[in-house]
Image (cartoon, rainbow over all chains, first blue to last red; front, side):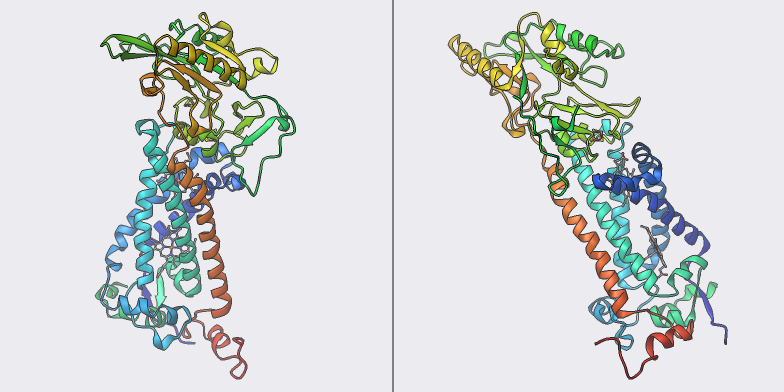
Length: 209
Length: 304
Ligand code: HEM
Ligand code: HEM
Ligand code: SF4
């Protein structure tokens, strides 16, 4: 069997960053949703007790959101809107049903990933700001009760949006086989690129493998 | 406390309701008559004595009011509100500031921890400190600002209406101590009856706007107040229209059900897609899996 030609897709720093975000994210999501759903308070027992979940969630949240922002900043140049993006979006049905010959070619990231990228930018910023406003007993006393009430609402809304997008992200990452290996070890095959991100092969930046 | 005494609890919903109370007893209330209070603070001292509260000594803030706000270590204070009346005369308006024991408490609605805030059959709102996680949602939700988070143990505290005394058939410590009769205690019905009489009496004496503060927005309170001028509750440091706020209601009644539907919907779509569309494999990377996915049964298809 011939050895597939490999292309570097994710640098080591970004890979470490991503899986650190996943690890702290699991803790943040489970503890966060233990406050959202009173009947599922046991989700927070990953932290030991409900009180510990309460005390540790904001810290885990920061440990998740700050590296995520670093990663998003480093991936920004791959996620700018490009010309072919609209045609790809309109062909979303063929993408989902894997009608390969009908999928318009795209570059390093497809428009779906770009939407996800933007959602993570917005939600991570809003979650951090509102999270700090809700953080008892350290920061909440500096804000009016009305602004804290809106912060709690926004924090919950953004948490739900982020969870839904992470579910979609997980679904797509595991569906498109080879992506998770790419995020784990850095490399994807040339054939993988041809199939999923054909224009990426024209990219100068990949000569650095 | 038996669960038969609990009328409502935090962290429950229509799908997961509170057990029905089997003991209906008259609701109780405290009546504070601001027109009788002389600001002696006996109630404030009695509260700290009975409940063994010792707030840290603060600093002078230019007012006789001390401390300036209720806290985890001072559950009731007398507010010294300075008020200029129509004749340009300055006077103090005293408010006995403590938990109002709302009939429809915003703190209980905001609390997402099952059983941390309960409403008992006698109408009082009570905290269970062993359940409280200290998130402070109740503190932000309370329209009266009378529930406080203690930074030392991250638990919330407030006036209990002296539940321990009331259970033994006694009045709360503040009422017991009041020197002028401005504080009274009894069934809500009786307190409203006495208050109405007092308001009528005040009107006769020239206080045309005298009235009873028993705000509708929280379906009435377990501490009702007779005021000189019911149109200016702010001059007593009281909110004009206290209620469970819009963001709190949206969060509990709209975001939670819609969010749950969205999360479950996303999971369902993902699962159905995976089963129906199947794997997405690059032939070169994994020829065997690719063959199984795409060519194994050329004449028969699983997609009927
Ligand atoms: C810098 C980031 C974050 C900070 C500082 C933060 C802080 C907080 C705080 C202070 C609370 C109130 C409970 C507590 O005190 O522990 C809270 C609740 C919550 N957090 Fe975060 N958080 C952050 C990020 C996140 C993230 C990334 C998620 C998940 C998407 C999340 C989901 C939640 C949820 C679901 C709640 C419960 C909201 C509710 O009760 O409706 N948080 N957060
Ligand atoms: C738990 C399961 C997760 C898996 C299996 C996973 C997998 C992956 C994979 C395979 C990629 C690379 C996609 C590609 O090469 O085209 C990726 C990218 C990325 N992931 Fe995850 N991920 C997970 C969770 C998360 C979480 C919780 C976050 C943060 C909220 C996150 C944020 C990102 C970001 C920002 C990118 C870059 C995408 C872009 O720039 O458009 N991931 N992930
Ligand atoms: S601080 Fe305690 S009582 Fe208040 S909302 Fe949070 S869990 Fe409930």
